[in-house]
Figure: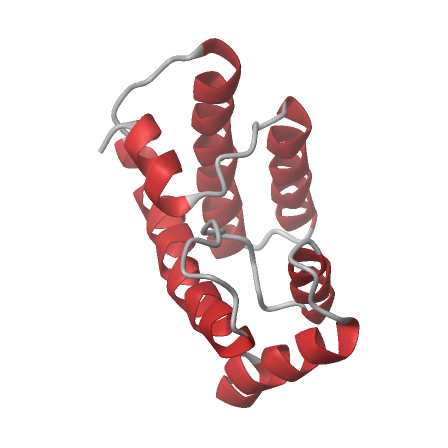
Amino acid sequence: MLVSEYRKLYTRGDPIYFKFVLGEARELFDEVIVWNVPGMREEFEDVLHYTQLWLYSRCGIDMRIWHATRHSVDKFIKRNGVWREMYAYLGLPKETPAWGGNYNRVQKVIDHLARHGISKEKSEEVYKKFVADKK
């Protein structure tokens, strides 16, 4: 799959800034500090994933998704399914842009859904129903 296809199907299509790559690098560094090897692998893939998205967003470099990022890309695609369920539950339009962000932290759910006009209380409810109760 090309980066352009991936972005159209599985992201909001927002520009990717280098600060996002740096944010993933920070998460990688956090895993290195505690020497969490599985976490380091996951975050390293996320750094590469965001680097490729940034290259497309900033420079228009449209290439096939790198094999080295396959787990990261799959993780983001799977997250979209849960977000879509949340969107449907909240009555958001089907056309609401996909987002592969981490829904395992309630504050991320609140922040993301606020962009769509969803209250903090309703966001906490949907987090509990689709995330917390499934753990």
